[in-house]
Length: 492
Image (tube, rainbow, N blue to C red; front, top):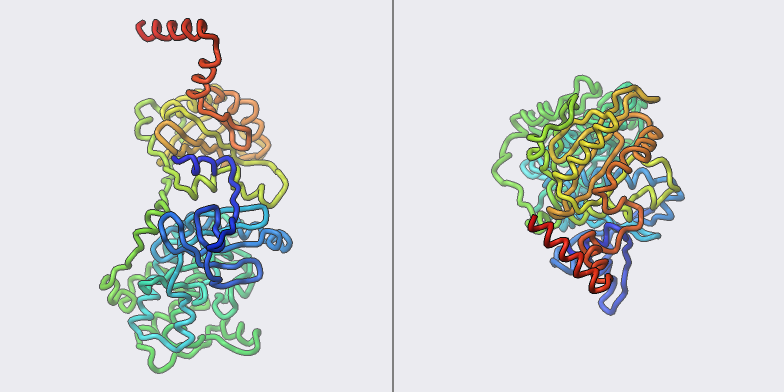
Protein backbone atom coordinates (compact mmCIF):
# COMPACT_ATOMS: atom_id res chain seq x y z
CA UNK A 1 0.00 0.00 0.00
CA UNK A 2 1.30 3.43 -0.86
CA UNK A 3 1.89 6.03 1.82
CA UNK A 4 -0.87 8.20 0.35
CA UNK A 5 -3.39 5.38 0.65
CA UNK A 6 -2.32 4.65 4.17
CA UNK A 7 -2.72 8.27 5.27
CA UNK A 8 -6.36 8.12 4.26
CA UNK A 9 -7.01 5.55 7.01
CA UNK A 10 -6.13 7.94 9.78
CA UNK A 11 -6.71 11.35 8.28
CA UNK A 12 -9.75 10.97 6.05
CA UNK A 13 -9.55 14.68 5.16
CA UNK A 14 -9.80 15.87 1.57
CA UNK A 15 -9.40 19.23 -0.08
CA UNK A 16 -10.08 21.00 -3.34
CA UNK A 17 -7.13 22.89 -4.72
CA UNK A 18 -7.50 25.61 -7.32
CA UNK A 19 -4.97 26.12 -10.05
CA UNK A 20 -4.87 27.69 -13.50
CA UNK A 21 -6.37 24.57 -15.04
CA UNK A 22 -9.48 24.60 -12.84
CA UNK A 23 -10.64 22.69 -9.78
CA UNK A 24 -8.67 19.66 -8.66
CA UNK A 25 -10.08 17.38 -5.98
CA UNK A 26 -7.52 15.86 -3.60
CA UNK A 27 -4.90 16.01 -6.35
CA UNK A 28 -6.75 13.09 -7.96
CA UNK A 29 -9.68 14.38 -10.02
CA UNK A 30 -9.95 17.36 -12.35
CA UNK A 31 -13.50 18.71 -12.14
CA UNK A 32 -15.24 19.70 -15.36
CA UNK A 33 -18.69 20.78 -16.48
CA UNK A 34 -21.84 20.59 -14.40
CA UNK A 35 -23.93 17.58 -15.45
CA UNK A 36 -26.95 18.26 -13.28
CA UNK A 37 -28.09 19.52 -9.91
CA UNK A 38 -30.79 19.12 -7.31
CA UNK A 39 -31.71 20.70 -4.00
CA UNK A 40 -28.90 19.10 -2.03
CA UNK A 41 -26.31 18.03 -4.58
CA UNK A 42 -24.59 18.86 -7.84
CA UNK A 43 -23.07 16.34 -10.26
CA UNK A 44 -19.92 17.21 -12.20
CA UNK A 45 -18.03 15.52 -14.97
CA UNK A 46 -14.48 14.81 -13.82
CA UNK A 47 -11.34 13.05 -14.98
CA UNK A 48 -8.93 10.94 -12.97
CA UNK A 49 -5.50 12.57 -13.13
CA UNK A 50 -3.87 9.17 -12.62
CA UNK A 51 -5.69 7.05 -15.21
CA UNK A 52 -7.47 9.58 -17.41
CA UNK A 53 -10.74 7.75 -16.70
CA UNK A 54 -13.93 9.82 -16.95
CA UNK A 55 -16.03 9.81 -13.78
CA UNK A 56 -19.05 11.63 -12.38
CA UNK A 57 -18.65 13.30 -8.99
CA UNK A 58 -21.75 14.00 -6.94
CA UNK A 59 -21.12 16.84 -4.49
CA UNK A 60 -23.48 16.84 -1.50
CA UNK A 61 -23.89 19.92 0.68
CA UNK A 62 -23.58 18.55 4.21
CA UNK A 63 -25.16 21.57 5.90
CA UNK A 64 -28.33 21.27 3.78
CA UNK A 65 -28.51 17.54 4.39
CA UNK A 66 -28.23 18.08 8.14
CA UNK A 67 -30.85 20.83 8.10
CA UNK A 68 -33.55 18.69 6.48
CA UNK A 69 -32.62 15.43 8.24
CA UNK A 70 -31.40 13.39 5.27
CA UNK A 71 -28.35 11.97 7.04
CA UNK A 72 -29.69 8.41 7.10
CA UNK A 73 -30.54 8.62 3.41
CA UNK A 74 -26.95 9.58 2.53
CA UNK A 75 -25.55 6.80 4.71
CA UNK A 76 -27.93 4.27 3.17
CA UNK A 77 -27.09 5.33 -0.38
CA UNK A 78 -23.38 4.82 0.26
CA UNK A 79 -23.93 1.44 1.90
CA UNK A 80 -26.22 0.24 -0.89
CA UNK A 81 -23.92 1.34 -3.72
CA UNK A 82 -21.02 -0.48 -2.09
CA UNK A 83 -23.12 -3.62 -1.92
CA UNK A 84 -24.59 -3.72 -5.44
CA UNK A 85 -21.75 -4.05 -7.94
CA UNK A 86 -23.19 -5.16 -11.29
CA UNK A 87 -22.59 -4.31 -14.98
CA UNK A 88 -26.03 -2.67 -15.17
CA UNK A 89 -25.71 -0.60 -11.99
CA UNK A 90 -23.79 2.67 -11.75
CA UNK A 91 -20.68 1.89 -9.77
CA UNK A 92 -19.45 3.90 -6.81
CA UNK A 93 -15.66 4.06 -6.86
CA UNK A 94 -15.00 5.98 -3.67
CA UNK A 95 -16.38 8.57 -1.26
CA UNK A 96 -14.52 11.58 0.05
CA UNK A 97 -15.48 14.23 2.56
CA UNK A 98 -14.57 17.64 3.93
CA UNK A 99 -16.23 19.54 6.75
CA UNK A 100 -18.70 21.06 4.30
CA UNK A 101 -19.07 18.56 1.43
CA UNK A 102 -19.36 14.86 0.65
CA UNK A 103 -18.10 13.63 -2.73
CA UNK A 104 -19.40 10.50 -4.45
CA UNK A 105 -16.97 9.43 -7.20
CA UNK A 106 -19.06 7.33 -9.58
CA UNK A 107 -19.01 5.68 -12.96
CA UNK A 108 -19.68 8.20 -15.74
CA UNK A 109 -22.63 7.28 -17.97
CA UNK A 110 -21.83 9.06 -21.22
CA UNK A 111 -25.19 8.28 -22.85
CA UNK A 112 -27.23 10.26 -20.31
CA UNK A 113 -30.72 9.36 -19.05
CA UNK A 114 -32.92 6.78 -20.75
CA UNK A 115 -35.71 9.30 -20.18
CA UNK A 116 -34.19 11.56 -22.85
CA UNK A 117 -34.57 8.79 -25.43
CA UNK A 118 -38.17 8.07 -24.48
CA UNK A 119 -39.02 11.78 -24.49
CA UNK A 120 -38.37 11.73 -28.24
CA UNK A 121 -40.89 8.94 -28.75
CA UNK A 122 -41.43 5.21 -28.32
CA UNK A 123 -38.51 2.83 -28.83
CA UNK A 124 -38.29 -0.07 -31.26
CA UNK A 125 -39.36 -3.37 -29.74
CA UNK A 126 -35.91 -4.99 -29.78
CA UNK A 127 -34.27 -1.88 -28.24
CA UNK A 128 -36.93 -1.65 -25.52
CA UNK A 129 -36.54 -5.36 -24.80
CA UNK A 130 -32.76 -5.03 -24.44
CA UNK A 131 -33.13 -2.25 -21.87
CA UNK A 132 -35.85 -4.18 -20.05
CA UNK A 133 -33.65 -7.29 -19.90
CA UNK A 134 -30.79 -5.30 -18.42
CA UNK A 135 -33.13 -3.57 -15.96
CA UNK A 136 -34.57 -6.88 -14.74
CA UNK A 137 -31.06 -8.36 -14.35
CA UNK A 138 -29.91 -5.36 -12.31
CA UNK A 139 -33.03 -5.31 -10.11
CA UNK A 140 -32.80 -9.07 -9.58
CA UNK A 141 -29.20 -8.64 -8.43
CA UNK A 142 -30.24 -5.89 -5.99
CA UNK A 143 -32.94 -8.12 -4.53
CA UNK A 144 -30.44 -10.96 -4.12
CA UNK A 145 -28.42 -8.60 -1.92
CA UNK A 146 -31.47 -7.61 0.13
CA UNK A 147 -31.74 -4.17 -1.52
CA UNK A 148 -34.97 -2.64 -2.88
CA UNK A 149 -34.59 0.42 -5.12
CA UNK A 150 -38.10 1.90 -4.61
CA UNK A 151 -37.69 4.70 -7.19
CA UNK A 152 -37.24 2.97 -10.54
CA UNK A 153 -38.08 5.25 -13.48
CA UNK A 154 -36.43 6.25 -16.80
CA UNK A 155 -34.87 9.34 -15.16
CA UNK A 156 -32.89 7.01 -12.88
CA UNK A 157 -31.76 4.72 -15.69
CA UNK A 158 -28.58 5.90 -17.41
CA UNK A 159 -26.79 4.70 -20.54
CA UNK A 160 -23.08 4.20 -21.02
CA UNK A 161 -21.13 4.83 -24.24
CA UNK A 162 -22.09 1.33 -25.47
CA UNK A 163 -25.82 1.96 -24.91
CA UNK A 164 -25.91 -0.37 -21.91
CA UNK A 165 -28.36 0.47 -19.15
CA UNK A 166 -27.11 1.55 -15.71
CA UNK A 167 -29.47 1.80 -12.73
CA UNK A 168 -28.67 4.85 -10.58
CA UNK A 169 -29.93 6.95 -7.66
CA UNK A 170 -30.27 4.67 -4.66
CA UNK A 171 -31.24 7.53 -2.35
CA UNK A 172 -34.68 6.03 -1.63
CA UNK A 173 -33.54 2.41 -1.50
CA UNK A 174 -34.08 0.16 1.48
CA UNK A 175 -32.38 -2.89 3.00
CA UNK A 176 -34.21 -6.07 3.92
CA UNK A 177 -33.45 -5.15 7.53
CA UNK A 178 -35.80 -2.16 7.15
CA UNK A 179 -38.82 -4.46 7.26
CA UNK A 180 -41.05 -4.36 10.29
CA UNK A 181 -42.25 -7.40 12.23
CA UNK A 182 -44.92 -8.02 9.59
CA UNK A 183 -42.12 -8.55 7.05
CA UNK A 184 -43.13 -5.48 5.03
CA UNK A 185 -41.79 -2.02 4.28
CA UNK A 186 -43.93 0.94 5.36
CA UNK A 187 -42.20 4.06 4.04
CA UNK A 188 -44.23 5.62 1.22
CA UNK A 189 -41.76 6.83 -1.39
CA UNK A 190 -41.09 6.87 -5.10
CA UNK A 191 -42.48 8.77 -8.08
CA UNK A 192 -46.32 8.64 -8.17
CA UNK A 193 -46.71 7.42 -11.76
CA UNK A 194 -44.36 4.47 -11.14
CA UNK A 195 -45.30 3.33 -7.62
CA UNK A 196 -47.22 0.12 -6.95
CA UNK A 197 -50.80 0.24 -5.60
CA UNK A 198 -49.80 -1.33 -2.27
CA UNK A 199 -47.27 1.48 -1.70
CA UNK A 200 -50.02 4.07 -2.17
CA UNK A 201 -52.35 2.19 0.20
CA UNK A 202 -49.84 2.59 3.07
CA UNK A 203 -50.60 -0.78 4.59
CA UNK A 204 -47.13 -2.17 4.10
CA UNK A 205 -45.56 -3.64 0.98
CA UNK A 206 -42.99 -6.13 -0.27
CA UNK A 207 -40.02 -4.24 -1.74
CA UNK A 208 -39.45 -6.96 -4.36
CA UNK A 209 -43.03 -6.84 -5.64
CA UNK A 210 -43.06 -3.02 -5.63
CA UNK A 211 -39.89 -2.86 -7.75
CA UNK A 212 -41.38 -5.41 -10.21
CA UNK A 213 -44.44 -3.17 -10.69
CA UNK A 214 -42.17 -0.19 -11.45
CA UNK A 215 -40.30 -2.30 -14.02
CA UNK A 216 -43.64 -3.02 -15.70
CA UNK A 217 -44.48 0.68 -15.91
CA UNK A 218 -41.04 1.33 -17.41
CA UNK A 219 -41.56 -1.41 -20.03
CA UNK A 220 -44.87 0.18 -21.02
CA UNK A 221 -43.25 3.62 -21.30
CA UNK A 222 -40.39 2.31 -23.46
CA UNK A 223 -42.77 0.67 -25.94
CA UNK A 224 -45.55 3.28 -25.88
CA UNK A 225 -43.70 6.55 -25.38
CA UNK A 226 -46.13 7.60 -22.63
CA UNK A 227 -47.24 6.51 -19.14
CA UNK A 228 -49.87 3.79 -18.58
CA UNK A 229 -51.32 5.66 -15.58
CA UNK A 230 -51.62 9.41 -16.03
CA UNK A 231 -54.11 12.03 -14.95
CA UNK A 232 -53.96 15.71 -14.06
CA UNK A 233 -55.79 14.81 -10.85
CA UNK A 234 -53.38 12.91 -8.59
CA UNK A 235 -56.15 11.08 -6.71
CA UNK A 236 -57.69 9.94 -9.99
CA UNK A 237 -54.29 8.65 -11.11
CA UNK A 238 -53.96 6.76 -7.83
CA UNK A 239 -57.40 5.25 -8.41
CA UNK A 240 -56.31 4.04 -11.86
CA UNK A 241 -53.11 2.57 -10.40
CA UNK A 242 -55.08 0.82 -7.64
CA UNK A 243 -57.30 -0.91 -10.19
CA UNK A 244 -54.58 -1.28 -12.84
CA UNK A 245 -56.69 0.65 -15.35
CA UNK A 246 -54.54 1.09 -18.45
CA UNK A 247 -54.86 0.46 -22.16
CA UNK A 248 -52.13 -0.93 -24.38
CA UNK A 249 -51.70 0.78 -27.77
CA UNK A 250 -52.48 -1.33 -30.82
CA UNK A 251 -48.82 -1.81 -31.77
CA UNK A 252 -48.08 -3.80 -28.60
CA UNK A 253 -47.46 -7.50 -29.49
CA UNK A 254 -49.82 -10.00 -27.78
CA UNK A 255 -46.86 -11.46 -25.84
CA UNK A 256 -46.10 -8.06 -24.34
CA UNK A 257 -49.74 -7.48 -23.41
CA UNK A 258 -49.86 -10.79 -21.56
CA UNK A 259 -46.58 -10.09 -19.78
CA UNK A 260 -47.71 -6.63 -18.69
CA UNK A 261 -50.98 -8.07 -17.45
CA UNK A 262 -49.00 -10.24 -15.04
CA UNK A 263 -46.52 -7.52 -14.01
CA UNK A 264 -49.11 -4.76 -13.54
CA UNK A 265 -51.23 -6.97 -11.31
CA UNK A 266 -52.67 -4.79 -8.51
CA UNK A 267 -52.53 -7.79 -6.16
CA UNK A 268 -48.88 -8.19 -5.09
CA UNK A 269 -49.41 -11.79 -3.96
CA UNK A 270 -50.36 -12.91 -7.49
CA UNK A 271 -47.99 -10.52 -9.31
CA UNK A 272 -45.39 -12.30 -11.43
CA UNK A 273 -41.95 -12.90 -9.94
CA UNK A 274 -38.65 -11.92 -11.57
CA UNK A 275 -37.74 -15.59 -12.09
CA UNK A 276 -40.97 -16.05 -14.05
CA UNK A 277 -40.30 -12.88 -16.07
CA UNK A 278 -36.93 -14.34 -17.04
CA UNK A 279 -38.66 -17.50 -18.25
CA UNK A 280 -41.00 -15.52 -20.51
CA UNK A 281 -40.45 -16.26 -24.22
CA UNK A 282 -40.64 -12.58 -25.26
CA UNK A 283 -38.16 -11.59 -22.54
CA UNK A 284 -35.64 -14.29 -23.51
CA UNK A 285 -35.63 -13.37 -27.21
CA UNK A 286 -32.16 -12.22 -28.33
CA UNK A 287 -30.91 -12.27 -24.75
CA UNK A 288 -27.43 -13.56 -25.55
CA UNK A 289 -26.99 -12.03 -28.99
CA UNK A 290 -25.11 -8.96 -27.76
CA UNK A 291 -23.19 -9.49 -24.54
CA UNK A 292 -22.75 -6.47 -22.33
CA UNK A 293 -19.47 -4.67 -22.82
CA UNK A 294 -17.85 -3.60 -19.60
CA UNK A 295 -15.23 -0.91 -19.21
CA UNK A 296 -11.91 -2.49 -18.29
CA UNK A 297 -10.81 0.69 -16.53
CA UNK A 298 -13.85 0.44 -14.28
CA UNK A 299 -12.72 -3.02 -13.23
CA UNK A 300 -9.36 -1.60 -12.24
CA UNK A 301 -10.89 1.23 -10.22
CA UNK A 302 -13.15 -0.92 -8.04
CA UNK A 303 -12.89 -4.43 -6.65
CA UNK A 304 -15.59 -7.04 -7.05
CA UNK A 305 -17.98 -7.62 -4.19
CA UNK A 306 -17.26 -10.77 -2.21
CA UNK A 307 -20.21 -12.57 -0.72
CA UNK A 308 -19.86 -13.90 2.80
CA UNK A 309 -21.66 -17.22 3.05
CA UNK A 310 -23.33 -17.77 6.38
CA UNK A 311 -22.91 -20.86 8.48
CA UNK A 312 -24.19 -21.74 11.91
CA UNK A 313 -22.00 -20.92 14.87
CA UNK A 314 -20.05 -23.91 16.18
CA UNK A 315 -20.00 -25.03 19.79
CA UNK A 316 -16.24 -25.13 20.09
CA UNK A 317 -13.27 -23.01 19.13
CA UNK A 318 -12.02 -23.11 15.55
CA UNK A 319 -9.82 -26.15 15.13
CA UNK A 320 -6.20 -25.57 14.18
CA UNK A 321 -6.58 -27.45 10.91
CA UNK A 322 -9.36 -25.06 9.85
CA UNK A 323 -7.21 -21.96 10.15
CA UNK A 324 -5.70 -22.30 6.71
CA UNK A 325 -9.17 -22.42 5.17
CA UNK A 326 -10.28 -19.51 7.32
CA UNK A 327 -7.58 -17.16 6.14
CA UNK A 328 -9.28 -16.18 2.89
CA UNK A 329 -9.28 -12.53 3.69
CA UNK A 330 -10.95 -9.56 2.06
CA UNK A 331 -8.51 -7.37 0.15
CA UNK A 332 -9.27 -3.66 0.42
CA UNK A 333 -9.27 -1.09 -2.35
CA UNK A 334 -9.10 2.67 -1.82
CA UNK A 335 -12.85 3.02 -1.26
CA UNK A 336 -12.90 0.21 1.31
CA UNK A 337 -10.01 1.81 3.17
CA UNK A 338 -11.82 5.14 3.34
CA UNK A 339 -15.15 3.67 4.36
CA UNK A 340 -13.56 1.56 7.11
CA UNK A 341 -11.49 4.43 8.45
CA UNK A 342 -12.10 6.73 11.37
CA UNK A 343 -11.81 9.62 8.96
CA UNK A 344 -14.83 8.32 7.10
CA UNK A 345 -17.03 7.27 10.00
CA UNK A 346 -20.22 8.86 8.68
CA UNK A 347 -21.77 9.17 12.12
CA UNK A 348 -18.89 11.43 13.06
CA UNK A 349 -19.53 13.61 10.03
CA UNK A 350 -23.11 14.29 11.05
CA UNK A 351 -23.80 13.66 14.70
CA UNK A 352 -22.51 13.61 18.25
CA UNK A 353 -20.68 10.50 19.49
CA UNK A 354 -23.12 7.75 20.47
CA UNK A 355 -23.05 4.13 21.57
CA UNK A 356 -20.73 2.44 19.09
CA UNK A 357 -21.59 -1.04 17.88
CA UNK A 358 -18.25 -1.73 16.25
CA UNK A 359 -14.54 -1.32 16.89
CA UNK A 360 -11.54 -1.68 14.59
CA UNK A 361 -7.82 -2.10 15.07
CA UNK A 362 -4.80 -2.54 12.86
CA UNK A 363 -2.10 -5.13 13.45
CA UNK A 364 1.30 -5.95 12.01
CA UNK A 365 0.79 -9.62 12.88
CA UNK A 366 -0.02 -12.27 10.25
CA UNK A 367 -3.61 -13.48 10.02
CA UNK A 368 -2.84 -16.83 11.65
CA UNK A 369 -1.52 -15.08 14.77
CA UNK A 370 -4.55 -12.77 14.91
CA UNK A 371 -6.92 -15.76 14.70
CA UNK A 372 -5.03 -17.65 17.42
CA UNK A 373 -5.25 -14.61 19.69
CA UNK A 374 -8.97 -14.25 19.04
CA UNK A 375 -9.43 -17.94 19.92
CA UNK A 376 -7.48 -17.44 23.14
CA UNK A 377 -9.57 -14.42 24.17
CA UNK A 378 -12.83 -16.20 23.32
CA UNK A 379 -11.86 -19.18 25.46
CA UNK A 380 -10.88 -16.95 28.39
CA UNK A 381 -14.17 -15.01 28.20
CA UNK A 382 -16.20 -18.22 27.73
CA UNK A 383 -17.50 -17.21 24.31
CA UNK A 384 -18.48 -19.73 21.67
CA UNK A 385 -16.48 -19.17 18.49
CA UNK A 386 -17.40 -20.25 14.99
CA UNK A 387 -16.19 -19.40 11.52
CA UNK A 388 -17.61 -18.16 8.27
CA UNK A 389 -16.05 -17.78 4.84
CA UNK A 390 -14.00 -14.79 3.79
CA UNK A 391 -12.11 -14.29 7.06
CA UNK A 392 -15.29 -13.79 9.12
CA UNK A 393 -15.47 -15.15 12.67
CA UNK A 394 -18.45 -15.16 15.03
CA UNK A 395 -18.43 -14.98 18.83
CA UNK A 396 -21.50 -15.73 20.94
CA UNK A 397 -22.16 -15.51 24.63
CA UNK A 398 -23.38 -18.58 26.51
CA UNK A 399 -25.93 -16.75 28.67
CA UNK A 400 -28.96 -14.63 27.87
CA UNK A 401 -28.39 -10.90 28.28
CA UNK A 402 -30.81 -8.01 28.52
CA UNK A 403 -31.64 -8.33 24.84
CA UNK A 404 -30.89 -11.97 24.20
CA UNK A 405 -27.54 -13.62 23.55
CA UNK A 406 -24.74 -11.22 22.65
CA UNK A 407 -23.17 -11.96 19.27
CA UNK A 408 -20.08 -10.35 17.75
CA UNK A 409 -18.73 -10.71 14.21
CA UNK A 410 -14.99 -10.36 13.66
CA UNK A 411 -13.73 -9.75 10.14
CA UNK A 412 -10.09 -9.57 9.07
CA UNK A 413 -9.10 -7.35 6.14
CA UNK A 414 -5.71 -7.67 4.46
CA UNK A 415 -3.79 -4.56 3.43
CA UNK A 416 -0.55 -6.47 2.94
CA UNK A 417 0.35 -10.03 4.05
CA UNK A 418 1.88 -8.55 7.21
CA UNK A 419 -0.58 -5.73 7.90
CA UNK A 420 -4.26 -6.28 8.70
CA UNK A 421 -7.33 -4.44 9.85
CA UNK A 422 -9.73 -6.28 12.17
CA UNK A 423 -13.35 -5.20 12.65
CA UNK A 424 -15.35 -6.36 15.70
CA UNK A 425 -19.05 -5.62 15.21
CA UNK A 426 -22.04 -6.32 17.45
CA UNK A 427 -24.58 -8.31 15.42
CA UNK A 428 -27.05 -9.21 18.19
CA UNK A 429 -27.74 -8.47 21.84
CA UNK A 430 -27.41 -5.40 24.02
CA UNK A 431 -25.05 -2.60 22.97
CA UNK A 432 -24.08 -1.69 26.55
CA UNK A 433 -23.15 -5.33 27.23
CA UNK A 434 -21.11 -5.35 24.02
CA UNK A 435 -19.23 -2.21 25.03
CA UNK A 436 -18.57 -3.53 28.53
CA UNK A 437 -17.23 -6.82 27.13
CA UNK A 438 -15.01 -4.91 24.72
CA UNK A 439 -13.66 -2.63 27.45
CA UNK A 440 -13.18 -5.21 30.20
CA UNK A 441 -12.27 -8.34 28.25
CA UNK A 442 -11.62 -8.17 24.53
CA UNK A 443 -9.50 -5.02 24.23
CA UNK A 444 -7.15 -5.95 27.13
CA UNK A 445 -6.90 -9.50 25.81
CA UNK A 446 -5.87 -8.37 22.33
CA UNK A 447 -3.35 -5.71 23.37
CA UNK A 448 -0.37 -7.90 22.38
CA UNK A 449 -1.34 -7.93 18.72
CA UNK A 450 -2.92 -4.47 18.36
CA UNK A 451 -0.92 -1.69 16.73
CA UNK A 452 -3.63 0.93 17.07
CA UNK A 453 -7.39 1.04 17.72
CA UNK A 454 -9.40 3.17 15.30
CA UNK A 455 -9.97 6.69 16.57
CA UNK A 456 -6.95 6.63 18.89
CA UNK A 457 -3.64 8.30 18.21
CA UNK A 458 -1.47 5.86 16.34
CA UNK A 459 2.28 5.22 16.67
CA UNK A 460 4.25 7.21 14.15
CA UNK A 461 6.16 4.12 13.07
CA UNK A 462 5.54 0.38 12.80
CA UNK A 463 6.83 -1.73 15.75
CA UNK A 464 9.91 -2.83 13.78
CA UNK A 465 10.93 0.78 13.03
CA UNK A 466 10.24 1.84 16.61
CA UNK A 467 12.57 -0.89 17.81
CA UNK A 468 15.30 0.21 15.43
CA UNK A 469 14.92 3.85 16.55
CA UNK A 470 15.10 2.87 20.25
CA UNK A 471 18.19 0.84 19.51
CA UNK A 472 19.90 3.72 17.71
CA UNK A 473 19.20 6.07 20.66
CA UNK A 474 21.02 3.77 23.12
CA UNK A 475 24.68 4.39 24.01
CA UNK A 476 27.11 2.48 21.75
CA UNK A 477 28.07 0.00 24.49
CA UNK A 478 24.43 -0.89 25.25
CA UNK A 479 23.72 -1.23 21.51
CA UNK A 480 26.68 -3.64 21.20
CA UNK A 481 25.57 -5.68 24.25
CA UNK A 482 21.97 -5.92 23.01
CA UNK A 483 23.14 -6.97 19.54
CA UNK A 484 25.34 -9.64 21.09
CA UNK A 485 22.43 -11.02 23.13
CA UNK A 486 20.29 -11.14 19.98
CA UNK A 487 23.05 -12.98 18.07
CA UNK A 488 23.43 -15.50 20.91
CA UNK A 489 19.70 -16.17 21.04
CA UNK A 490 19.67 -16.78 17.29
CA UNK A 491 22.57 -19.28 17.62
CA UNK A 492 20.73 -21.11 20.40
